[in-house]
Image (cartoon, rainbow, N blue to C red):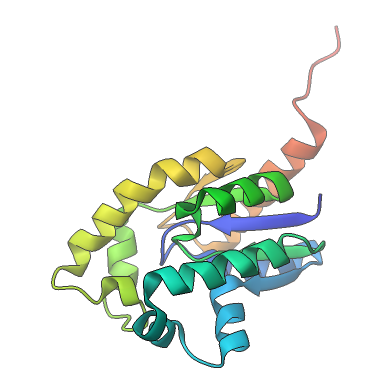
Length: 178
């Protein structure tokens, strides 16, 4: 199967890691949020404003269905893609799913000045990050084939860790001969 999907919270590094992983793997990178923006001609916050989160999630599910049907892709989902049980089933069935697990404090540091994140446009965005992490972490773990702990390391090191985990999945555990 040559479809890899990166999941994780906003600010986890899915786009940065995904681009580099795709480059090193000779695959094409697609960011679901960017794909939605390209198809609609508007930014994600505008979709949230007009259609609400529910409308955005419908669009997201359609894009995930289409992209996970294509070979040779590294796909970065939006952080909330795992909220939909149908998305989780598609991801787990059609791709190798990698969860970029980043501590909520690091996510907050990375996203605190970003005004392009509709779910953080609330009175206490730091608490919102922590609440979203508590809600989503079990769902990420449920669907992930590989979990990579990140946050402070450089993207290149994380990509090498992912490549090693992918190789181990292909070859299976080594058993010494007796």
